[in-house]
Length: 372
Image (cartoon, rainbow, N blue to C red; front, side, top):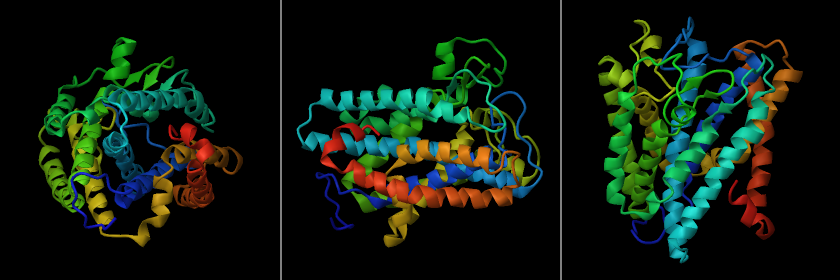
C-alpha cells in the first residue's frame, strides 16, 4: 500500500513505525535486564513509597532512565495492535464475541507466561531472588487486554475521554502507603509493593490509560496514517512540555516530591505505579520516536525484526542474560563492560527472532503461535 494512502475504511498493511518503536524499546529493556543479570547494578526501583534510588554519576542513572521508555511503550503499542487487529478481523466477518475471546485467551496466556515461564527466569538472578510470587509486566499487559477487550469494538469517540479519565485517576493514588497491609486484590489492581510472599510491580489499572491511548492512535492510523504520525509529533512535544511544567507542581503529578535539586533528581520520576510526570515524559519521547520512525524506511529493518517478535524476544532475552550473568560474570562487572554483553545478547537474539518470525507464518503453526 502507498504510504500516503488516507483511506478510512481498509486496514493498512503492517505499519513499520510501531514495530520499529517496539523493537527499540525492547533493546532498551534488554539493557536494563543486562544491567540486572550481568552488571548486577540494577536500580532498586522508583516506587511511590520507601527509599528512592539515588544516583551519584550520570552513566548509572542514564542506563536506568532510558529503559523507562519500555513499559509505557509496550502498553501503548499493545493498544494500537488491539485496535487494528479488531478492525481487520471485522473485515473478515469475525463476530464480536470471537474478537473478545481472542483477546481474553491472549491475555490469559500472557498472565500464565508471567508466573510459569518468566518468574523462573528471574529466579536465576546471580544476586539471588527471594520472592515467592512476582507480578511483572506480562501480568499487567494480560490483565489490561482482558479488561479492555471489548473497547476496540465500541465507538472510538469514547477513547479520548476514557484515556483522560484513566490518566488523571493515577494522580489520586495515596501519597505514601508503603508498608501498609492491603488486600491481594488491591495489590493486583492498583497498589505496587507487598512482601516476600507476593510482590507487585505492575498492578493493572494504573497502566490502562496507555492502552486506551494506543487504541485511539490505532484508530487514527486506520483513518489517516500521515495525520496520525503528525499528531504523534505534536502530542509528544506537548507531553514533554507538560512534564517540565508539572514536575515542580507537587505530589498530585509526581506521587512524591523531587528527591534532590540537580538534573538527575528532576528526571528521576516514580515508575511504580506510573506517575503523571513519568507518563508525560516517557510517552512524549515515545511519540516523538514514533514520528521519527514514520519518516524512515529501510533503516528500520533491524528494529522491526525484534518488534515483530516481542514475546519471543522477551522470554528469550531473560534466560540469555541470566545465563551470561551466571556463567560469564558471576561476581558482576562494570557498566561499560556490561554494554559488551548487552550487545552480544542482541547479536545472538537477532537471528533467533528472524527465524521465529518466519516460523509464525507457517500454516501448521499459525493457529497456536498467533497467541505468542
